[in-house]
Amino acid sequence: MTTKSVSWKDYLIDIDENGSVKVSKNGALCDNAKAALREIAAAAGFEIDEKWNTQQIGAKLAKFLEEAAPASTVKPKAEKKDDEPQVKASEADIAGARVRVYGKAQNRTALGIMHAYMVMYPQAKLEDIRKAFPDQLNPDSGVRQNFVYAEDKGTTADWNGFFKNEDELLTMGDGKKVSVVSMWTKPSFERLVAWAKQYGIVVADFEKAAGGGQKGSFRLEYLNGYIPPKQSNININLKQKKGIPWWIWVLIAALIVLLCFLLFGKKKAEPQIVEVEKVVVVHDTLYVKQIAEIEAQYNAVTFVVGKADLSEEAKFVLHDLAKVMKDNPEIRIRLEGHTSAEGDAAFNLRLSEARAKAAVDFIVNHEGIAAERLEAVGKGFTELKNPDDPTAPENRRTEFIVLN
Image (cartoon, rainbow, N blue to C red):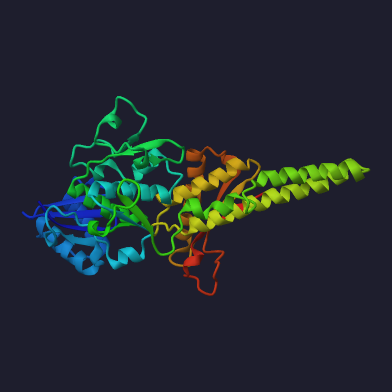
C-alpha cells in the first residue's frame, strides 16, 4: 500500500509502507527507480551518499522535496481515510489554475477533468488527448485505453467500462465523439489529479460538489479570469458584431468596385488595380490581426530552459496558425526566434534557430503546409525587444512575420 506520493516536475515518487520505491515519469513507470531518483536529485540540487540504497535515497529525497517544494506536491496518504481519494488543491495550485472541477465521485470527477481539457483545447483530436492523458495513468483496473471513439462497435467502446451517455461524450476538434473510461481506482485517480495540474486543472474536494452540477454530476469553474478559447476567439473569427462573415464584406467591396468601373471608368486597367488593392487590404487586415494574436498566445507558452522541444500547448497554437495559412493560401510567414542576453552568444543563436525550426517542422509535417511558405530564422540576442534590460523575459520570444 502506498503511504506517500511526491510529484516533482514530470516525475512521481511513490513510497509503499514497506519502504519500497516506485518512480514514474510522464505517467510511465521507470524501469530503474534508483537511476530515476538520482536524476531527480541532481536536478533538484540534492546530494546523494553513494552508500545509500534505493529505499534510503527515496525516503530522504522525498523529505527534501517535501520541505523545498510547495505543500501541494506532497500527499501523505495517511491523513485521510483509505477510501477517500486525496484531491484537495493548495492555494498555490489554485492561484496558477484556470479550471476547477467539482464532482460527486472520483470517476465523475475524472470525466470532468477530460471535459475541462477539451474546453481549454477545443481543437484537440483523439490522438492529442491520448498524448495529454496517457493510458499509463490508469493501469490498476486492467484498462487498455482511456479514450475510444464512441461510434466504434464490437470494441471496448461497447463495454460498460466507458461513459456512453450523450452529455458525457467528448467532442473532438474534428467533430468526432469520444468515450472516456469510467473505471478509476483510487491510485489511478490520484495520479490523474496530480497529472492534470500541468494543464491548469485542479479538483475540488468531493464534499464541496453539493447538488452535482452539470454534465454527468460534475461542473466546471473558471479561475483567475480565465476565458475558454471558444468564447475568447469569437471576435477574432468575425468581422462584424452581428456575425456577418468577413468574406461577405469582401464580396460587397468587390461588387462596389465593379459598379464604379461600369458607371465611371473610362480606362480598363488603372481603376481596376486601385480598387482591387482596397479589397485585399480588408482581407489582409483580418489575417494579420489573427496572426498577431496567435503570436501572443505562442509566446505565452514557455520552452524548457536550453531546449527546443515543443510543448502540447505550443502545438495547439501552431495548429491555429496553420489553419490561418490554409484559409489564406497566398501568405508566407517567417518565424524568428529570439533569446535574452544570458549565457553564450553562439549557443543562444543555435537555440533560437532550433526553436524556430521546430515550429516550422511541426507545421509542415503535422499540418500539411508547404515548406516553401515558411522560413525559420534564429536571431539569438542580437535584436533585443527590451535593450534596457537584456535579461528581461520579453526578449525571449518568437515573432511571426508575414512576408507578402
